[in-house]
Length: 221
Image (cartoon, rainbow, N blue to C red; front, side):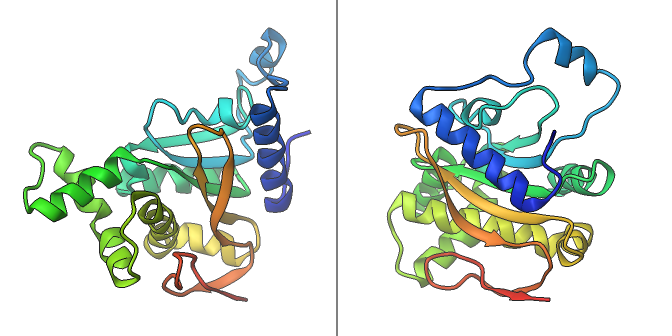
């Protein structure tokens, strides 16, 4: 049975990641029978807002299958109207109880944004939109004295969590009502492990700017 609460959904993701890390995946819900079962509708238990990096395939690193995860991916897990609309569809239409922002170490989008800030030379074309979207995270990292890429990545993940909640009244309402939680995770490319760097639990009413280290402070409702 698919998880129906934020706590259950998060536990299922962690369990799947442990199987992936230890080399004991079950590859659930990937058989022909399940393919047929979900053909007429979907009931995913988590929305994953992840980086487009080719090494960050959510269904693989969380050991899940068809119909389990509602995945939205952009370079640097940057968030615009289309991403927010997709997240809102997942939580309000599909009733998904968990939203995960999934970043990773050595993120190319963060590196590109940091290089552009240092040289004063922004990239050309639409890549500039990605770099510009990472800008607030760079400024926050500078305020906190964080300069290494992976430290900035953690702050950027937390910043994305906060930005989604601040930009989507629908998502914030689902969290405040206790129907959904939002978690920021960082994936280690070599080890395959995920770790939590930010969390806004279900029934949280207010999210303040992230404290030192990039974690949003939460005032429960």
